[in-house]
Amino acid sequence: MSSRLFSYATLSVVLLFLLGPFVIIVAAALSAGETLAFPPQGLSLKWVIKVFEVESFRASFALSMFLAIFGTLAALVLGVPVAYAASRYKLPFGETIRTIVSAPIIVPGIIVGLALLRYLVLPLDVSVGLALFIAHTALILPYAVRVVSASLDNLRSDIEEAAVLLGSSRIATFFRIVLPNIQNGILAAFILGFVTSFNQVPVSLFLSGPGVRTLPIDMIWYMEITYDPSVAALAALLAFLSISIVFLAERFLGFSRYV
Image (cartoon, rainbow, N blue to C red; front, side):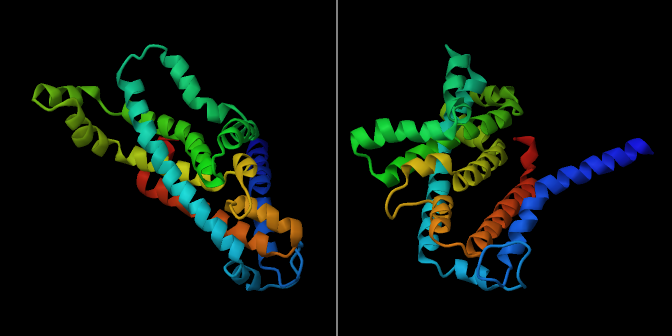
């Protein structure tokens, strides 16, 4: 009995630790007061409505969506062939290649952002938008490779060999047999990359510029000049968006099988 109570108490503490900040943010977002505070001063949806009226939020949201969608697609275009080669062939220096591909995950984001700023943006005069796109693609690439590799490991290679023996070329086999069988893994990689890119802060902090800010960076900038609950409302909306995406991915794709 005591062990069961201990388990329930531990679970309650963990849930409080994980969900407590989220509950506070949602409560602050629904506050009727004029400043960000908890507990809320009454209840109102006016700050949720204001989120959609702030022009900078709309512009930064559009940029974050562009980077998340097209950066993830670019990472998949690069990552799927890498994952296939690593899964099906014995590559020379294979472990070194895997380490290099995983570097954006291993290295802290602040270092990645500073390195790109110092050795890409400044010396080559690369635009802020292009630098952000390159950075987000590089950050998502390791996730794309790992998730697609997990999907390929579950696909029997003898199916491909049978198609080749029956006269299909390697390229045709890849597009007609391999891709349809790993499409759930690719979708899972897309969702993981999308969420990772959309919520990215350290790299975007170094590469943002005047009028070119991702939504998380714009939220930080907004809080420096205004302390109303609209930032809490936006944070709550983004949290609900991320949770909904992951929930649907788990419900229809079995997201946890790949990550």
